[in-house]
Image (cartoon, rainbow, N blue to C red):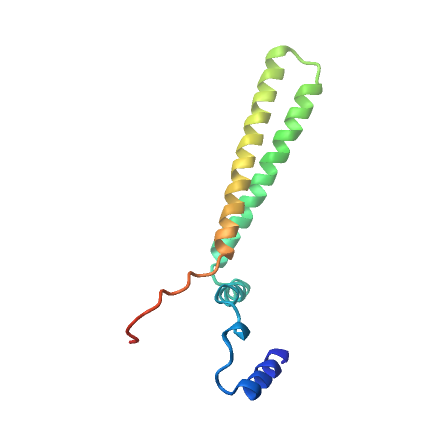
Length: 123
């Protein structure tokens, strides 16, 4: 409602030619449109898969930390400790990679569509 009133006042003050600095930014408008699309369920399968990927990454990361703490503090023979620490560090590294993948996928999903290039001929 407030936007409507502002546009009504601007049109009354400047006529139909509202100055360009009062128009919303192209990127901002595209970003808001993309957020509305995601809220409406567009790309829901990609968002769900990315959410599962994030949970898997957190699980692997926490599992790796737990195994490292338990393996370092336990009093077992050297071979078992080395195996536990190796599994823990591998799980930690894989969890970090999966988390980074999920973070980049989320930023790609949130990114608005690119602006259309200017056209000389309108069709």
